[in-house]
View 1 (spheres, rainbow, N blue to C red):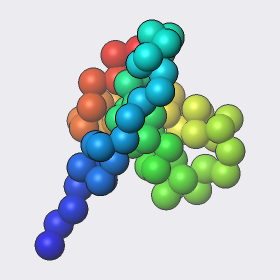
View 2 (cartoon, helix red, strand yellow):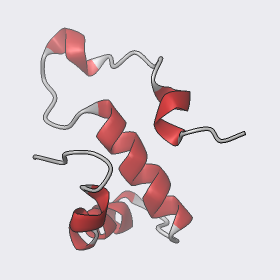
View 3 (cartoon, rainbow, N blue to C red):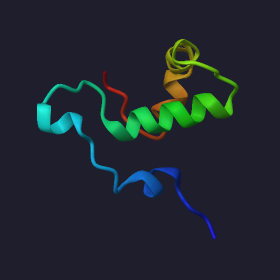
View 4 (cartoon, rainbow, N blue to C red):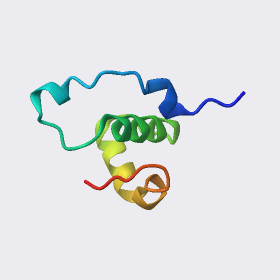
Length: 66
């Protein structure tokens, strides 16, 4: 049985939506964070650098427009 990562988290409420102050969709943040941690990132700085260096790969799965 195959389970897609984003399906697991699809029911999460994004508290930032109520305030209207978000730039990045929650599903993009979750996918980036999980991917980065699986690739050895240990903190938010590493995850940010991973996201920048792997943007073309990430865009195969989600838009990452911002």
